[in-house]
Structure formats: structure tokens, C-alpha cells
Length: 124
Image (cartoon, rainbow, N blue to C red; front, side):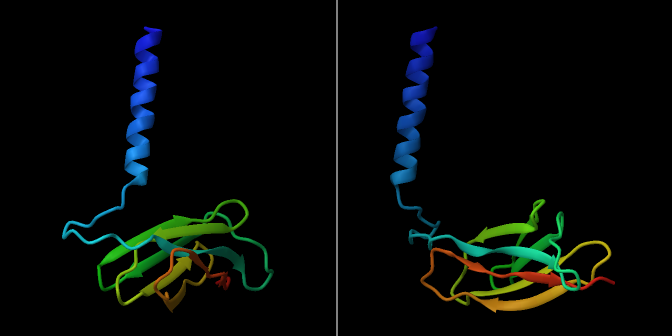
């Protein structure tokens, strides 16, 4: 039994190494771009207090993809996504009791990093 568990562990580690060391390829045979995204903190515009459990969404209209995250107890969020050649993302955020925040951002390629987008929500 112990020998089988050791063999299973070695097999899983070997497959993980192979997968992680390979370039990711799209269906058409081209390498996938490095992941990029946005991260930041959501705060109350009046009190500057962090807002937990707020939603943050990034929509890429060219590939019709929506990405969603929620802030943690310190108001922080992170949204990772693959951008297309337009690099445009429509960002909105909100929480009950606040006016929805909307903006459009451009991400400069090549970029394999996260842009910081801090969001301030106005109370209703």
C-alpha cells in the first residue's frame, strides 16, 4: 500500500512538472499570451474605508468574456485574464448601498503582470 502511494505521488509530480514546463498552445497552434490582469483595493469614496465583499468585473467586448472577483476583508481583489489584441477591458464594481463604478482601461502588451486599479465607490 505504501509503495503504491509513493508511486502515485511520483507520477503526479512528474505529470505536474511536464505540464508546467510546457508552453500553453491555443487551438489554432499559436502560443497563448502570458496572463495579465488587474488588482487593487475597493474603498468608500467618502470615508476611505475599505469595502469587503464588493464585486469587481472586467469585460472584454472583443472576445465576449466576463471575469468576476469579490473583495476580501481588506478590500483587495485580483482579476486575472487573457487579453486579446485590443487590450480593452470594461471595468465595473459595486456593492449594495453604493453607486456602481464604471470605467474602461487599456492594457499595454506585451505584459505579463497586473495593472493596479484602485476603485472608490460612492455611497447612495
